Each structure stands twice: as structure tokens, then as C-alpha cells.
Length: 126
Image 1 (cartoon, one colour):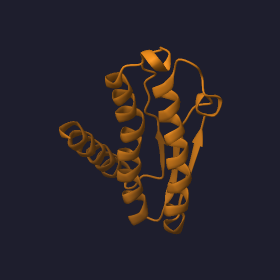
Image 2 (cartoon, rainbow, N blue to C red):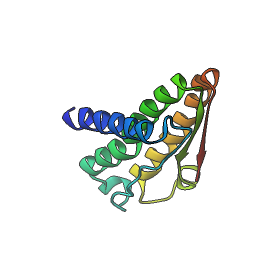
Image 3 (tube, one colour):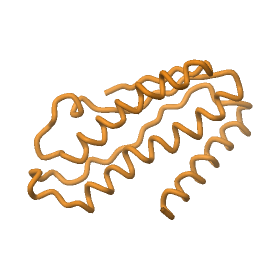
């Protein structure tokens, strides 16, 4: 939980620094990702799985939420999340990475629908 609070504060500070420097934020490339271990599912460590999810999913969400809040109050913008083709292929030995990037794809679809009324486009690239 302490890490999540720090990440949320860091994202808010980064967004504010962008607003202070440029007046508003029009575009955010939301690029968070680590690969994690490459091991078969039966050998994959829970600790590494959690670390990958925290960085790739929670980290992406924290920034998406912070920047979209700023964009919503300044007329909109565009967010591009980094996903991975691994999410579509189910790459063996990459359980955490594949799961995390699948989550980023789902988050992108939901955010696109939730944020469209605020003039914010949300897409993903792989």
C-alpha cells in the first residue's frame, strides 16, 4: 500500500509538472512494463507475478487516472497505453507479463469508453 501511495503521489507530481511547464497535457504515452521471470507456470514465483502486475497494471492505471483527470478539466486529450502482442498470443513462460498486458488492453477499452465524454481518446499499441 505504501508503494501505491508513492506511485499515486509521483504520478500526480509528474502531471502537475507537465501542466506547470506547458499549461496543460494533450498527450500521454503511458509506457510501464517489466517482463519478469521467464519460467513455466508451475515454477513461476508469486512474488515476481505480483511485482509485474504492480508495475505493468497498477502503474499504468495510476498514471492513466492522474493524467485523465487533468485532461478532463482542460478540454480533453489522448492517452496511448503500451500493451504487447504477447497478450494476444499467450507467450509460454511469461505468465505475469502476458496477464499484465492483457489487463492493460482491457483497461484501455474501459478507459476509452469512460473518458470519451470528457474528450479523451484512449488507445493501446503493441
